[in-house]
Picture 1 (tube, rainbow over the protein chains, first blue to last red):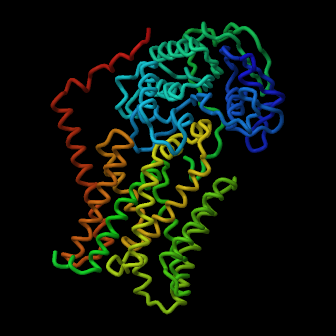
Picture 2 (picture 1 turned 30 degrees about the vertical axis):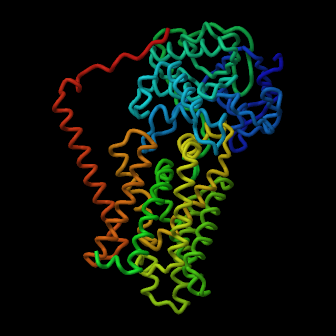
Picture 3 (picture 1 turned 90 degrees about the vertical axis):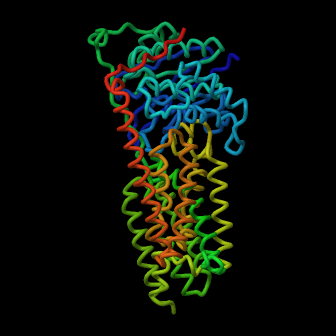
Length: 253
Length: 288
């Protein structure tokens, strides 16, 4: 298991022909916890979205578990945690129903959920401390609890690699702690983590390497840098708007 | 009722019940994607199919199914490929559809009463062949929407997550587009092109006033659709009203009753436990 989990080689990617990432290379090996840091609009979210295939590559290569991303099919090995739960749709969904989506990559589209699926959903809810909210509508949860629902969804599939987009942005301290605890347990099972963050908070002791993205390129790859300037102030507000999104289409909200 | 001794009334009832079950089963996914009115648009396109069917002396329902599927697939492709103004493309398709339908129906021997039948429904003229089409297609839609619920829920709830989970997102989107077209066309018989969206959307809106989860919403919406369809046909037979309009008005009446009851319950609860209003949020669970 020494093969890199993620290997990005000279990748270029962007939206509508406007490049956001330029010639980025990155390797993540098994067991590492890599934080992608950078200012708003630096391209850090685009980097992980390109890794996952949500943003098409203009040039370069992305390999997941040693397989070129276009031919990669073992998606159950990856757990993705987006920054936010999609905008509320009006149709209620329980926490357990959202987390159960995490089993689909493993189970496939056609097979109905079985006992193993329910057990995995329960375990994932316990891991993030939401077992008592399983039957509540997601919309009634706080932002931090919704974020924990999303990490439970990713954990339910039993992934080897977790990819998280700003898991701690605008999340209350209790949820950040619960988050760090769940991540710690995941690492104990030999998991690998790639996460985008603006601040590390309680996650900081877990991070083994930091990659700083600046204006679409990697400008630092090594130990976690010390916060500087107003970012070092304890009351600095780290809530930021989301990066560029793909235009919502008719059949995709 | 005596009227239900007649074959045509039995066919009307069975057709309405199948549609009452299938339309909300599909509609819940459309509501979840905020596409509640897409059924309306596809209904316009289906009307061209009706016109073509009448003109060519083929089953209008079957030709309409084909036209609506072509329209829905076009819409899905426009969305997937086109980067600009899907709005305009949709407007062209919708209004082209209804204008084409009116023109083709006019060219055929059919009377304007015939056009009315498709615009507002004409349940009692359902032929045995129509009923077979409705029952087979409607049952298939309901079964597919139930069987694929986890995957369709995932795609409609968070499409990007579904893509990263390796789900066949494009195929599932296409399935929803085609299912919408088929449902619209078979529901056309019961409630008409102009009232189709109501049967897909209103039972879902009613159910989610009181439900907490997706599965319970879907079950309740299908039950409500079944009720509105059955009771609507009964009212139409008893009071000699238009079946399509009766079904839709009953669905809307259910919505009003349930929404008012839910609101009243909320008010009563707040009065019964005034402390809840000012109570602090419960502590979040901290692990380890």
